[in-house]
Structures are given as structure tokens and as C-alpha cells.
Length: 144
Image (cartoon, rainbow, N blue to C red; front, side):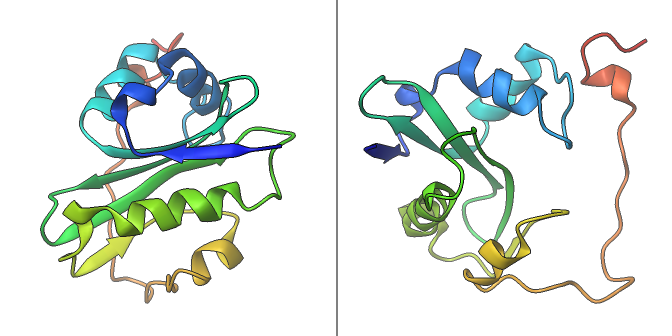
């Protein structure tokens, strides 16, 4: 099975990406238009099955392109998991020319810590980060 990784926004399949993200634990039922806007405002790597042209993976970076990046939405569809596709997408993003002066990359995850540790990620000391969750009705389909 041959997989290509592309940073070209023209290679993004919005329907496939929306389907992947809407099925994740971090953005269940996310609205398609929210995904479209997120993709427009991010640097993305997509994994594409060369035989079928199907999008099988996504990794996204939200960044100011100078000092800070948030790695998010890293996902690979079954049955392509476990083949190093996420690793390849992260490598491609780290090589992106607009991300070479960053002082800090961050991410939030409840799994795949081993993958991220390979790229130098480590736990954040307790009490250092804060968050402000957004009400689901702003981004989730079928809410409200």
C-alpha cells in the first residue's frame, strides 16, 4: 500500500477530513463549515492512498508562523493505522519552511504519547497551562 503525504491545500478532501474529525473523541459531530474554516487557517499534512486517491490521514498545525504552533487533529483512518503514516505527516510538518523559527510546539492528547515523544514532546508541568472551553453549540452539529 503506497501512501503520499502532501502539504498542498489543494489536495485536501474536505468531505473525507470532515468525516474523520467528526468521528474523533476531540471533535465529535463537528460541523463541516467549522472544519473548512479550520483547514483554511492552518498548515495541514494529508495522507493519500496512491491507489485510490482517498484521504486516509490528517495532521494540522495552528500557528503564527514565527514563534508558536499547536499541533492538532492528528488522525489516521482504519485500516491504515500502525503503518507510520502519522509519523510521516509530522515529519512533513516539521520540515515546513514557515515553521523553522518556532520557539514552542504544543499539543493536547489522551493517547499516542509514544509517537509524540519521538518528536521531542514532553508533559507540561502541572498548573502551567490553562484552557477556556467553548460551548458545544458553537461548533458541534445537532447541539442547541
